Length: 97
Image 1 (cartoon, one colour):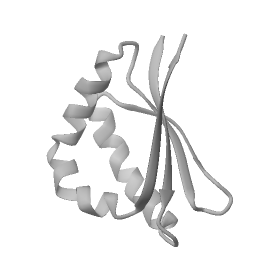
Image 2 (cartoon, rainbow, N blue to C red):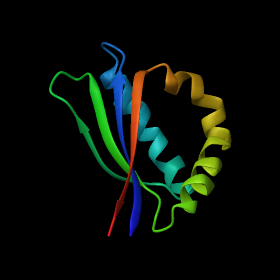
Image 3 (tube, rainbow, N blue to C red):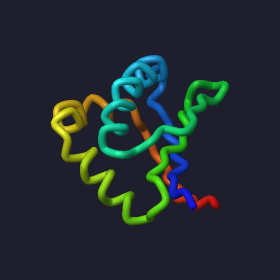
Image 4 (cartoon, rainbow, N blue to C red):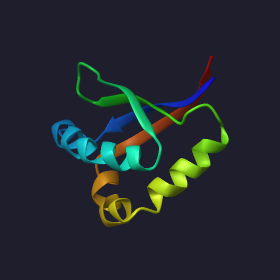
């Protein structure tokens, strides 16, 4: 079984290109924390960024990985800039076998 989040972010108008550049900097930080980015998509209107990030095979890994990510110096130093791109987010937890 794999535990993952399907995340849909509505990006502030006109900020998708900037968000994509910012997101590239997040991926190595997530990997360091044990979070794997599986897939990403941008809708045709460039208003939504949809992605899947996984946490391995144990639901307890979510808290451990997210705690490590959100307490990292990289996140803390950049959180306001990162969040400034996102108007709304929706997170759905999925479990696959």
